[in-house]
Image 1: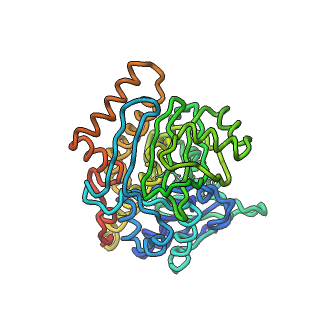
Image 2 (image 1 turned 60 degrees about the vertical axis):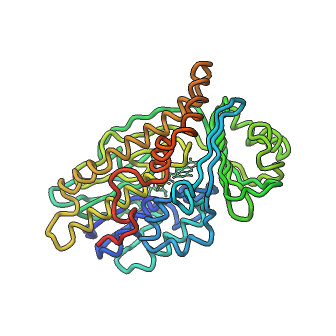
Image 3 (image 1 turned 90 degrees about the horizontal axis):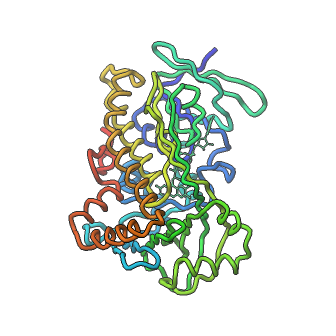
Amino acid sequence: MARSTDIIIVGGGMVGASLAAAVAPLGFSVIVVEAWPPASSAQPSYDDRATAVANGSQRIFEAMGCWEALRAEATPIRRIHVSDRGRFGFTRINAADHDLDALGYVIENRVIGPVLWQQIAACDNVDTLCPARVSGIEIHGEYAEVELSGEDGSSQTLRAALVVAADGAQSPLRRMAGIDSETHDYGQSAVIANVSTSQPHENEAFERFTDHGPLAMLPMSSQRCSLVWTMAPEAAEQLLGNSDDAFLAGLQQAFGFRLGRIQRVGKRHAYPLRLVRALAQSAPRLILVGNAAHSLHPVAGQGFNLGLRDVAVLAELLAGTRGNDIDPGGDDLRDAYAQWRAQDHARVIRLTDSLVRLFTNPLLPVKAVRALGLLGLDLLPVAKAGFVRQTTGRAGRLPRLARGLPLS
Ligand SMILES: Cc1cc2nc3c(=O)[nH]c(=O)nc-3n(C[C@H](O)[C@H](O)[C@H](O)COP(=O)(O)OP(=O)(O)OC[C@H]3O[C@@H](n4cnc5c(N)ncnc54)[C@H](O)[C@@H]3O)c2cc1C
């Protein structure tokens, strides 16, 4: 006997949990299925990374009612310094020049997870099933049925008008639904760690393009910086195995002395970097959000922010179905969602992909062009304003939550 609900969200990571928290006030009955215990250290979304939450995403969190709980742990980014190691081009982006208090906020994923899950737990109409994995999906005319497998070998069937796949870049649900994806392997890994420096960051972030890939130092709480350092996978493996002293010496050489001496490093992890793009945003009774739809290179910190805008748009479209006799899993809603998201997806994927390709191209003429590009960005206020609008999540047709408005 299948258990019925309005919406099933598969994946309770950063994006799936955000969606559950965003749609809860609309009164739908929602079930979140997550493979790992809620916001536990094993859950891959809430690991040792920190996320640069763009200014536009902060507004979404505020309108969803979870910013108050995040604010104390969020470090504002007031300036960004972008440079090309060993070359003359550089640019500075200052929040105040764009009438913003902050370009974004750095928050540890381990902080975001519990805040979202506590918000969900406080909603009577949202139920969570975890640890449980989705092992199959069947589409019928008016509903979809999702098959769950528990850790003990038990199984359960759920039925809903709409199923949302928020199950990450490898999205088992996307594959089960027969939606193809394309993958581009960048042949790079990102090494992440928290580091302490002898000079305070003063809320400035640094994005430095090196011959081996981009290196970002983001300002964090307790005067630490969150490091995202991109390089060939073999070099990343070697760095993980290095002593702290050897690691710090290599980092100092790549980053320079803009923050003085880099004194301490915490736990290090490496992530292989790929662009994964679903070739369709939906199938009957199924919509993809977050990494299940698009998994990006972390340069410019856009992946989660793009996923949170998926959430804001889907929540707004679902709000429009309430009391209007519109099927929340019907083709009209799916089409409206895909149409609304297409431009933002295309723009952000193009931006991050071309940044990676341009700044890791070893050919001399390309190096010269990118130096000129950075200089041009610095000298052309209109180009810079457009770049800032896009990367802070304030470009194109914005959903209500991203404008700081309630859903209805
Ligand atoms: C090094 C690095 C740094 C980054 N920095 C930034 C940044 O600064 N800013 C930014 O915007 N983005 C950043 N990103 C990208 C960001 O982390 C991702 O876009 C975001 O975490 C995606 O969240 P998600 O919920 O879509 O997917 P995931 O985080 O992958 O979550 C998927 C969830 O689904 C669950 N799941 C999977 N399969 C099943 C199943 N069969 N049944 C049930 N549950 C299942 C998983 O357990 C998991 O909890 C970074 C990425 C990396 C790698």
